[in-house]
Image 1: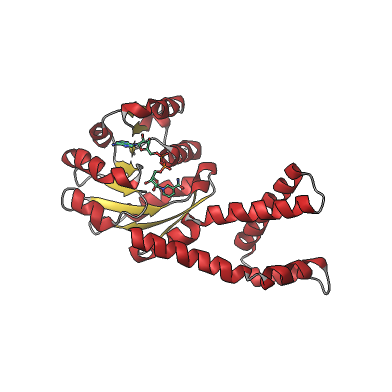
Image 2: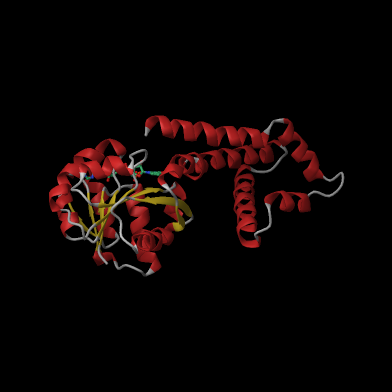
Length: 266
Ligand code: NAD
């Protein structure tokens, strides 16, 4: 299978690296494009062994699956450039925030096979969480193809398109919430006397470990939390502070606010 990236920025490079590292696709079967003004991004792609071009149509001619990995504002221009080169044999996978399947389909030849993905930045370290929705002309097997490709950079799941905005509010925007949590925990550690570097590492590993426990044990997080809290122990004292500040309500508000924002801009 040949893979093309229109756009050679952070997300395209993260996906390309994941595909290569997984051993599923070799670098010489991947091509990426970018305008001349962003030559440095193509240089980075070349260092990974990818083929590169300034011509978006060339990406289509040389690929079976084409990722639209440009900023949303560039999608319509790119779509008009690639439309003449597209056939029903191509699968177009858009990762552009807020651009609906119907919108992309309307810019491409009829019956184009379109998939919309909401990835997140931890894809860069192969710990991403992506959800994808299938367009009306997709064929049997397309969802499996997309799942196989996206899972090289983390967890990937198919959802109805109506869920893409909530996914944006949760896992799409979630890394930024969790960076703030890590920063806050580290600040707390510094306040009680830990060196900054150590506090930051402990905070980050704590989130990583808690997430792995939820995923690997399958035990409900409320149960895991109860297991940590011994009577009159320090954890329950800390938890009382968090609940007094409305931790869970604030997180729910954040997901809802980001979802609504995504709906309003989509
Ligand atoms: P980026 O700015 O790093 O990369 C964008 C790329 O598009 C660059 O290589 C740029 O040269 C290229 N480009 C611009 N105009 C072009 C054109 N006319 N033809 C071809 N290439 C062109 O952006 P990114 O962070 O990789 O994001 C890419 C897409 O992924 C965006 O639509 C964004 O909404 C989406 N996304 C990003 C994240 C994230 O966390 N970074 C998460 C979810 C979705």
